[in-house]
Image (tube, rainbow, N blue to C red; front, top):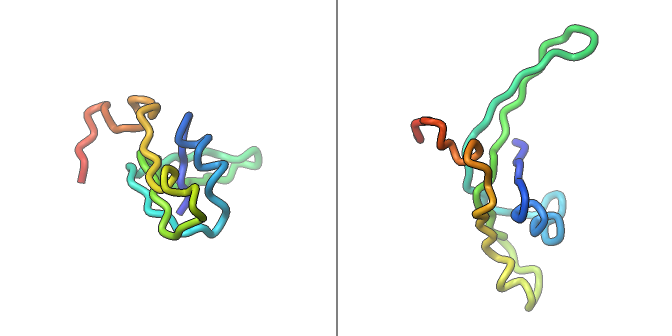
Length: 86
């Protein structure tokens, strides 16, 4: 499943996480759909991340990078539009 991160969280993750790195993600599910130029309907379900924790140590300097919560998540990403969390 794809994970989406925004703002400061995305910046930190781009410097510390590589494809295939084991991480623990907390967030909400988001679905979207669109139509391609040739008329095919497509859809995707993604996790919009609130916080990400590394599941393996990367080195001595990784202590501060282990948990990366973000207060920079836009309100709509937090589900503050009346969504009911399940």
